[in-house]
Amino acid sequence: MSAIGVLGGTFDPVHNGHLRVALEMRNVLSLSEVRLIPVGRPAHRAQPIASGELRLSMLRRAVEGIRGLKVDDRELERSGDSFTVDTLASLREEVGDTPICLIIGMDQFHSLDQWHEWRKIIALSHICVARRPGSAVPTDGPVARLLSERQVSDPGRVHEAASGYIFLGAVPVLDISSTRIRALIAHRQDPDFLLPGRVLEFIQTERIYD
Ligand code: ATP
Picture (cartoon, rainbow, N blue to C red):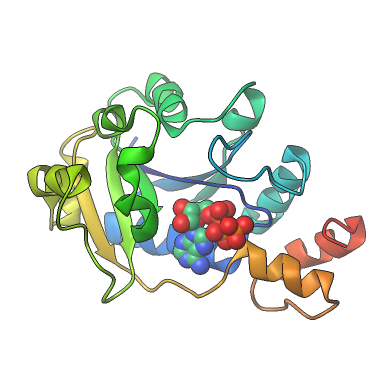
C-alpha cells in the first residue's frame, strides 16, 4: 500500500473546507487515500452537537463516489477521551510500514506541544501541515525545534519512511467552518455551497442543527 493520509476532526458537520484540504493534500503528497476520522470524545474542546452516529452518516454521504477519500470510524468505536496518538498507534498496527501522513492545519501545528504524548506522534506518522499562503511558521519553542530537525521540502520524501518528517504544504484553504454552518442553519439562512448538497439534505431531513 502506498502512503495514506489521516484527517481527524469533529466534522459537526463535515464541509467543503475539510474535503478540499483532504484532496489537495492527497494530490500534493500522492497519497493512495485520505481517511477522515471523526473524533469520539474530544479531550480538549466542547463535545459535538451531533451524535457520533450522525456525524458518521454525514461523512459517509460526503465521500460517497469520491475517489481517494474514506471514512474511518475507529475513534467512535473506542470509549474514553480520543487522543490522536492512540488513533495513530491503532492505524500503525493495521498498516504496518506504510507511511502515514497526519494532516493538520497551521493553527493546530503551532500548539502541537499541547497534544497528549505529542512526541510520539512524529514517531508514528509524518506531520503534513496545510499552510495558508502567508501564514506564520513557528520560529521558537519546542515545535519550532522539531520543525528544524524534521522538515522536508520535497513531498516525495514521505514515501521514503513510515513516519518522522514534517511537510508544510502551501495549499488553498477555504474559509469555511462547521461553526458558521451551524449558525446559518440556526438562523434559517442558506448554507448551500459550503458543504455537499447531499449532506445538507440529510441535515435538513434529520433536523440535526435546528
Ligand atoms: P468548528 O467550527 O466546529 O470548530 P471546524 O470547521 O474547525 O469545526 P473540525 O471538524 O474541528 O472543523 O476540523 C477538522 C480538521 O479540519 C482540523 O484539522 C481543522 O484544522 C481542519 N479544517 C477545518 N476547517 C478547515 C478548512 N476550511 N480548510 C482546511 N482545513 C480545515
